[in-house]
Image (cartoon, rainbow over all chains, first blue to last red; front, side, top):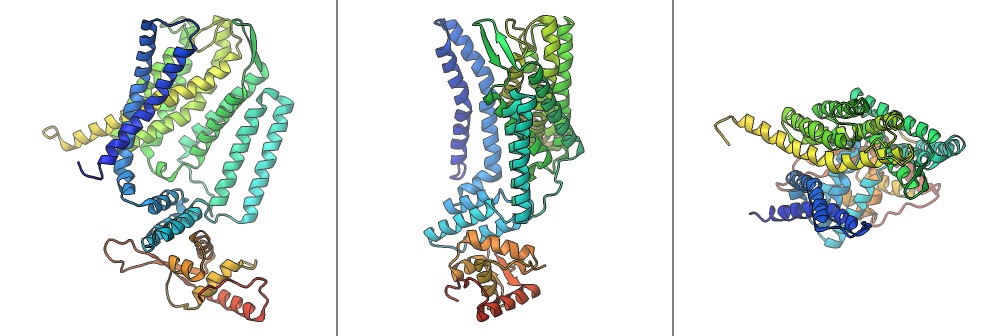
Length: 416
Length: 104
């Protein structure tokens, strides 16, 4: 094994261990938080569940590390600290400033003294992270508009939907901040979107999610819990911030995606198809459950677990095979998750009241004794967690499988 | 296009340093050393000058093997005109702050 490849294997092991850590912690937390002492069988069952969800993530982390190492990691590992710092900072430069990153990186090769190298790299990194952008006046106007919009959103939400004030404040504040940052970092803030289908679906999903959340907060700002008898707010501050960050991230990705995500047409198409299938499937299964069809009347947890297996895994696999690269599969999975999250939350909130009226329980698992407002937290947390912890690793596995299959087909049947 | 606002002392220093040998190509690190300025100050100035058409940039053509080509800079016609104006202002004392020209 070459010297350059050894840290790659060590890194892959560390990446897998890091991916396994949250699942191990979750297992320990559940063991400790149990009201009654758990039997050995119960502990083992829980460990098996953690392994079922954790193993794909460990393999996915291994594959992602290996892909990154082949692309950039091996090259970075040959650089010294200052060169690594500058290369990392230069990678954040907007497309129209890319040459300047190359220029500073090339200039660093001329600096021999170690202290001088660090000084030059630190200065260059500062210039790369905060390059001169648009006119200061324009940046000032953008910043002022962002502050005004945030204040207006907070005031309006306080007057109309008090329960949604934290969400409105965080969401509009984040969007304003990101817009100001884009104006400040780039000379030309133009349309650099991923195409009308992706951007349109993202905007529709985010709008639907915001409207559904607002309506839900107007109708069900709080909910009761029978055991123990308590009243809870439907959208606690932490959940509101998580939703705002997720939606702002989705919007940012759809309107100004990173430059490496843009040129891949196949990824966008497969991403749109997967996200739409996830949301449409959710509504169909919900209706089937309400109609007592197919054993879906116990809630949609089963669908949320099965959908990534039957949609994201084969979708990413097909994207990688069609695009003949694992990257196409990975970006398709990224689009599916980013576009699917707001659509799924909106669909969840649209279906939950109907489900509650008919079944008398929550949409997740049909649990009774909890007010209908409890669906809002469920919709946000379960959608985001299952997409991140279950759909993403399956998408990574699919991408790796699809690209391996495409490679094998290209080589022909007689060769391995 | 030149801007109506007066350039900062550091921008003035960079422009005057480039104007000392207007036909020659200059390097970024060389300017940092010459003016005793950090890369974090010099490169944003070079970017702005290039954005405004005051600076011409090129890549080194005959870089030795194993070394990436360096980025080269020199003033354009409008850049030289700006340098002349700044130099004249400096000699007549109309510049509020004297540009720092260490080693110049």
